[in-house]
Amino acid sequence: MPEINQDTLFSFTKCMTHSIPYAKSYPKPHSTANLSAHSTANFSAPIPMSNIQSLIGNTPLVKIKNVIRKPGVQVFAKLEGQNPGGSVKDRAAYGMIKGALERGEIGPGVRLVEATSGNTGIALAMIARIFGLDITLIMPDNSTAERVQTMEAYGAEVLLTPAARTIEYSRELAEEMVANGGFLMLNQFANPDNWGAHFDSTGPEIWRDTAGKVTHFVSSMGTTGTIMGVSRFLKMQNPAVQIVGVQPTEGSSIPGIRRWSPEFLPKIYEPERVDRIIDVSTEEALETMRRMAREDAVFGGVSSGGAMAAAARLAEELEEGLIVTIVCDRGDRYLSSGVFG
Ligand SMILES: Cc1ncc(COP(=O)(O)O)c(C=O)c1O
Picture 1 (cartoon, protein in one colour):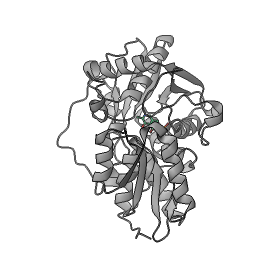
Picture 2 (cartoon, protein in one colour):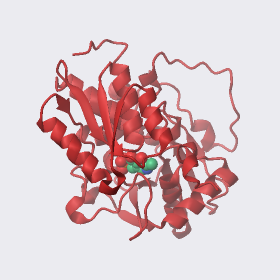
Picture 3 (cartoon, rainbow, N blue to C red):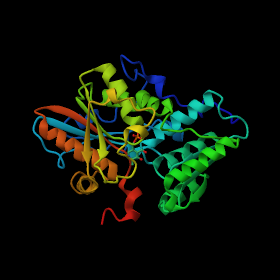
Picture 4 (cartoon, rainbow, N blue to C red):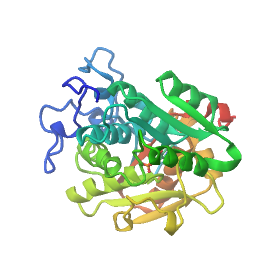
């Protein structure tokens, strides 16, 4: 059992109360300045951080000025690529590993195992390193070299399975390892600590940084952890806030998100927490992703392009509002696949 000390633990909730998110001791919001007309880079501001986990969250909101222009409607992108592991998944990975440690689920000699080729794998590898845990990540052998190498750089063991057998086979192998003993699978699709991390951090940050003015939240849906946690929190503050999920159109493929058929919906998904779902094609997601970088200097991944495309459609329908959309990760995670041309 790894030692947990003050330096290792960082609680999302330490500065939060539900009625007044993030009490006085919490760092000054990054994005208040963005809500006014101009903000300038401030190179002299102190950064009161002492360890990697304390850098998770508190990501900035950036105003979208060009890709979406609709009088009366403001659109802000929450840049999750600013997390130390490079994606929104740092929050869930931290929440799930910390939760398992606190419940004593990771006993001596137990290794973590997960089947994931994406941001979750990288985030879990980073958080496992922080806590001194061993982790095995299993993924199809067509996973991009940058992803595999990033996980290995954090000291994870990576097992590659034949691509023809898809991620389902990687998952079966992980389950087999758990059944044989000595491994723990966090199972982000069914783990309440996944959405809990967003309830404790992403939601309160959005409420705080928009000064409670957010009217719509738009998020791509993979495990649905982000949208489930943020929906819970924002609806508690103001039940009128509209929660909009984004999924690929039938036949489209967008890395990190899925068009779930009812029988395979993640266990943590509760349909009543999403007011509306918008379908986005791969082409629309890619085109919007490229425009975000070229026109607003927001360099996000494909699913972020999808969410922004959905936000654009929504903005067109509104007379007024403040939309927050999630930019899950950075575009450089996709460069080798040629999507930026
Ligand atoms: C690129 C990308 N976009 C969107 C998501 C969706 O986030 P969530 O799993 O919280 O629904 C993920 C999740 O891994 C992702 O990797």
